[in-house]
Image (cartoon, rainbow, N blue to C red; front, side, top):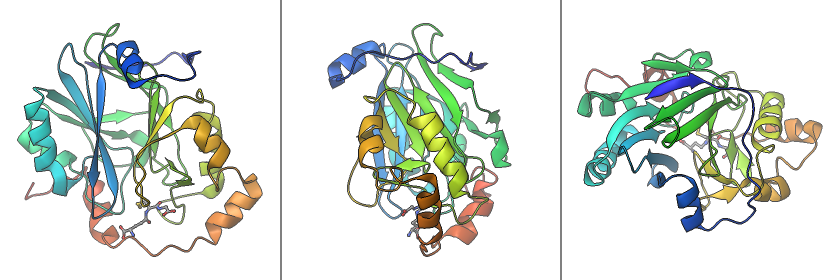
Length: 264
Ligand SMILES: N[C@@H](CCC(=O)N[C@@H](CSS)C(=O)NCC(=O)O)C(=O)O
């Protein structure tokens, strides 16, 4: 397993409508499992490489680590990386607890987040598990705006993007703390997510309305926030006035050390 620097060339696919089976075949048998944490409506993803049985997890939550470890064990997976898309404000990451339970697992976060982790990633890096040619590769894209350190992960062979709290289904991450910026978020989504092929599946970091996934094309057409002009979007975000996440004072300091707490 390596984290590679990526050539800037994007791989695109001409397929416009892929069934799950075709997607699975195209992705060389790799698979993704979407899991939900109910208190903060957070999605965690386990992505596995069928051949090597190596796996990574995106945005684990401390309270659901036992469930995640059980699934990892039941599927016979070797967890290599616990990746945080950003420093979360609403929940404590599960990456610290996972490292205690699975010592070979390494925590990963963007360098620009300023958080402590085993591995720091930057725009253009690749996270690889399994064989470089046949295994699973995630392209890291820097997508700041919700926080300054947000990353999205493009799984080209799986025709998918994991957007964290950057792009949500018919919505997007708030921009009123952690160095958030509506103007920056607008650029991130339009330049780094909406330039992907329309059929790519969008796997968000949260959903508060009971939805699970979307596609790039759907969000380009129907996302009520991102179909606005830049000016209208920034005004809309300024007027959003959401209440602060209940756990923010506990979660942010814990997530700055990737959830490596004394009790975890
Ligand atoms: N009520 C929740 C916090 C809900 C919230 O603020 N969600 C964030 C992502 S987690 S910081 C967000 O960006 N929401 C966007 C939106 O439009 O809802 C809690 O107390 O935890």
